[in-house]
Amino acid sequence: MQATPSRPMPSARPEPPLPLGKVLLVDDHALFAQGLAGLLKQESLAAEIFTAPTVEAATLLLARHPDFQLILLDVALEGETGLALLPRLAASPQAPPVVVISSSDDAGAVQAARAAGAHGFLAKSAGRAALVRMVRAVIRGDGYFPGGVAPLGSDMPLTPRQLDVLLLLAQGFPNKRICQSLNLTEHTVKTHLKAIFTQLGVHNRTECVNLARERGWL
Image (cartoon, rainbow, N blue to C red):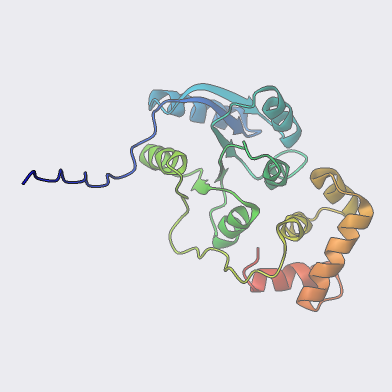
């Protein structure tokens, strides 16, 4: 009797090829951006690195270069908060993964990045080895966050767009700037805010943000 050839054992996911073709670094501190770009090249993580100091500049670069493979994003930028870039990317199925690179690594900052849709979070104080691990994990399709931060539960009662509005509200954005950041009409933003207030049982913006933080939505 002829032996039946055995099936090959499934292999672990292969490491994606490095260096990445194009990486976008969004940070308004020129010296830090130059240093990080240098590390990415020294570790053969990226072949070409573009930098942008603001969300608006990053949006223009993304429109011109749709083939970015990774975005490294600071939160504390001049003008709009860095997290405002994430809602703009949400509508694109081709959007690259985003990792927040921040000087603030408290649990609230990590949770806000995760809730906004970031694929990872790396403190600016992290070392070279952590940078390499982060890039490899994220391009492999895994998340990269500090330990001990629980993901948002599946019972999150807000829609993705309502969560976008809440995140910008928590950054202190008035309705007009929320409209501009999310490309929504003022009526739509007010409708989302009303739904969020109703869900939380609150009556003003301060109560809304405070209770959302208590519940781990921010």
